[in-house]
Image (cartoon, rainbow, N blue to C red; front, side, top):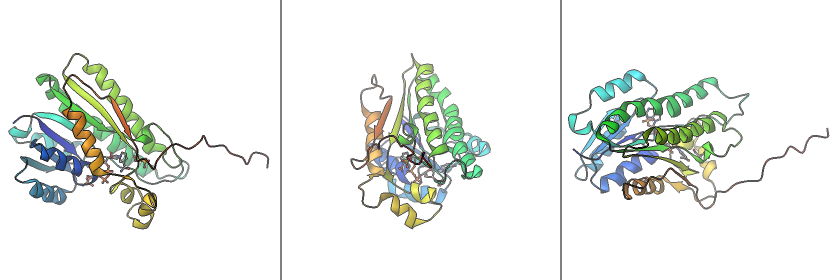
Length: 254
Ligand code: NDP
Ligand code: 8X3
C-alpha cells in the first residue's frame, strides 16, 4: 500500500482534521492517540474514503511505542508521511510557580515523544528513499509570552530538530516541514486549563481564531506540491493575532 499517512494525536483538533483532509485524497491512514474510542469513531466516519488503521499510542510511554509499531499490519507499515502532531500545553503559571509535573509531561510528550516516534519511522523512509515528516511546532517556539516557559521551549526544540533533520537528510528524497500555528481553537486550551471551559473560552473571546481545518489544509498542501520543493517552516496566525511591543517594567523607581 503506498503513501501511508501516519498521524499522531489524531483523536482531536489538528490531527483529526488532517485525517479527514487526507481521506479526501484517498490516502491510507494510520491514526494514533491514547483515546482509542475517538479514533474508532473517526475511522467509522472515514470508511469508504480511505483505508484506515487505528491503534492506541501514548507517545510518552516507550512500551506503548514499541507495541504500536510491532503490531502494525503489513499494509500500513511503510509510512510515507509522518504528522508528528501529538502534543499539549499544561498551565499558564510563571516559571517560579509552575508544576514540575506539568513541565515533565510537556517535555515527555512534545519533545521525547516526538523524537522517539521519528526515530522509529525514519529508517524505513531512508531505506525507501521516500517520505515527508511534518512536525507541529508553534508560534510559541518563536515568540515567548508570560506563562509559556516550558511549552515555548518544547516548540523551539521542534523547530531546531526539524532543521537538523533536514541537514542529516540532505541527499535523500525525504522532506521535513515545521508547521507553526498561532492561536487555534481546538481542545488545546481546555487541556491547558485542565478542563476549565470558561477559562479556555476566554482565550478566544472576541477573536476569530484559526480552526483545525485551516491547519489541515496547509499541511495537506505542503505534502501535495512537487516533490523537489521543501517547505522548511511555515508560521501561521489568524489575522486577529500579532506581536506586542517589548515589555518594559516601569516600576523601577520604588
Ligand atoms: P488537541 O488537544 O485538540 O489535540 C491534541 C492531540 O494530541 C489529541 O489527539 C491527543 O489525543 C493527542 N495527545 C496528547 N498527548 C498524547 C500522548 N501522550 N500520546 C499520544 N497522543 C497524545 O490540540 P491541538 O489539535 O490544538 O494540538 C495538536 C498539536 O498542535 C500540539 O502539538 C499542539 O502543541 C500544537 N499547537 C496547537 C495550537 C493551538 O492553538 N491549538 C497552536 C500551535 C500548535 P489523546 O488525548 O487521545 O491521546
Ligand atoms: C499554541 C499557541 O500561543 O497558545 O501553540 O502558545 S499558543
